Amino acid sequence: YEHFVKFGQFEGRPGAPAVDTGVPGQTFTLTEGIENLTGSLSNDTFIAGVTGASNATLTAGDQINGGAGAADRLNTFGNTNATNFTSATIKSVENVFAQMTTGGALDVSANADVKQAWNANNTTGATGITLTKAQTGGLEGASGTTATFTFSDATAATNDVATIALNGATTTTGVTIGGGNVETINLSATGKNSLGTLTNAAMTTLNVSGSGSVSATAAAGGALKTIPNRSE
Image (cartoon, rainbow, N blue to C red; front, side):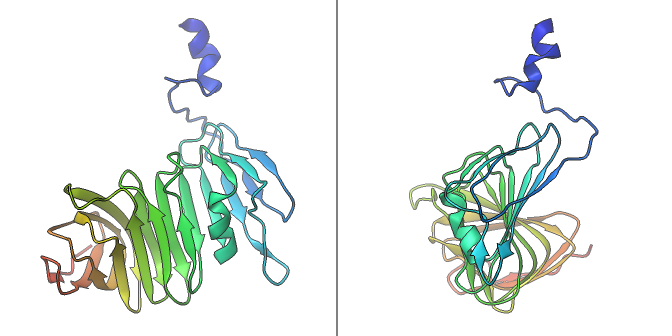
């Protein structure tokens, strides 16, 4: 046990505690080439930007390992980088933030290491994120027209619960819960959030928590027609 405490906890073995080293994490910027990146013991940030006119930097050959940090983050910019998330090899990255435009899609449902998937500061059009009920969807900043969250493992036979975190989120049209099988939606709000129309025909329960405020109207077919503002 003493040997494990001294050495094994830093080797990624089962049962190892989350380690807070007090040292800031590193920032890694991807290029168009194939890369093999490993994070540190702290919370690291990986940035997949766009080079040239529209060249993606997150590609099928890339391998990203977030390391031992408990809140490593991948920021993707552009629709192609978001789409390529499923073809790259990504491990131990807990948070993914995708800035997309019209038609952009991010699918994290097959990656259990991802705890949160955010639709972040999209400027135009409708975009979507596919995830599981164990993962939290996120909406941050302006989000074009419609932001859709599809929970791939929600079924009509069960009372499915999904969580969406909000951070100063706004849409010009609304937020859609895809698939139509999520009965309970938990919204966790930070800052002022204006969602427009919340569309989810299966919804029977809506819970709002957090220090922020939420304003939205539920589409016809949902059990709750109006979500009142909450004071911060």
